[in-house]
Length: 134
Image 1 (cartoon, rainbow, N blue to C red):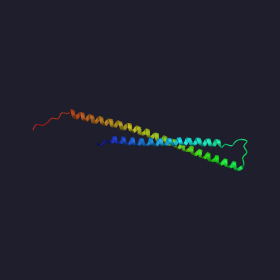
Image 2 (cartoon, rainbow, N blue to C red; image 1 turned 180 degrees about the vertical axis):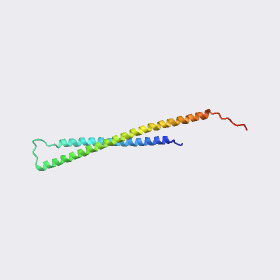
Image 3 (tube, helix red, strand yellow; image 1 turned 180 degrees about the horizontal axis):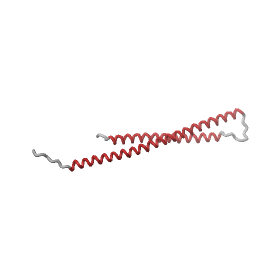
Image 4 (cartoon, rainbow, N blue to C red; image 1 turned 90 degrees about the vertical axis):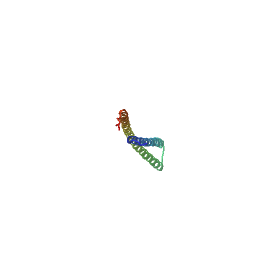
């Protein structure tokens, strides 16, 4: 069966939408992982805070400070990555909505085309052809 051009175009849009939806789901899972990691890093920062009245030597102070700086850098990287993922997810949502609109136009064209074909068939059936006598 020969497919019409609008049916093929609709199928391509459906495939593209499914691919974008799958990618969006992957990004959403990654964002949730980053949120859990950020929470863990914040908890580690709170646990490694300096206690008032505690006596530390210089090596302990230097080690704790460098550990906290490292955690803060990781927290900042995680935060930046979350912002990037959010932007990418918004881009995917925009693409999906654009594809939905295109799909609606394609469906409309398919309906119009089928109505035209149906009307042409009705006209052919209603016409009476005269035969020439031999």
